[in-house]
Length: 267
Image: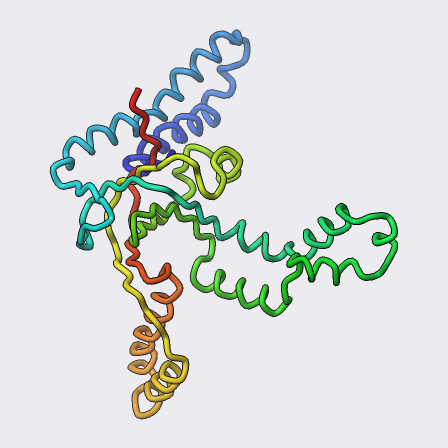
């Protein structure tokens, strides 16, 4: 499903090969049979599977250091972990697009489910609102502001165990399938358990921000300090807000740099 170990190396080999072939051997392809061209293409693209083998070798090297989590373990930052459980896929670009189109989609759904008399009336939007198919425009704007600030282009795979969540922050260029293919095949909450192997980078505990205290702290920072010192200290406030954004309920959240994500089958 996802693997980033040595992926760049394998991809570079393939991309370099094709770039060289295109720029220096273009003329040589003239007159070649289709079979010869397909043979060359097949031989070069086998390099793409190198990262699978290299990941297996890498896992063998670090398997003694991998902690298999069961949801109750105290996992330290920088640890290598393996976690399996029910999974959620959080695609923030798609969520933002969904919010932008929510009211329009709600109106269309209401129209398609209405009789002819209702369709000819002028109260479709109100009917949609009564059925929960319309959101306040300011609310949509505010939610998208949070996404823009904290999860711009974010794509996360979250594995839940008990009251603990393991949130893998993915680089989508390493996905084997496109994000649309994953959505169509598995949905946002896959019915099977997924396994993630990766390195713990952050631990988020329950964090609550008192707005009055937060504003006062910012004001205090800006008074009596140099501009540079004040701005530097404000990163502490920013960290508090981000912790609130990344927290799920009352549980603990681990941020993971994924090495691989897969569905394990006992064949």
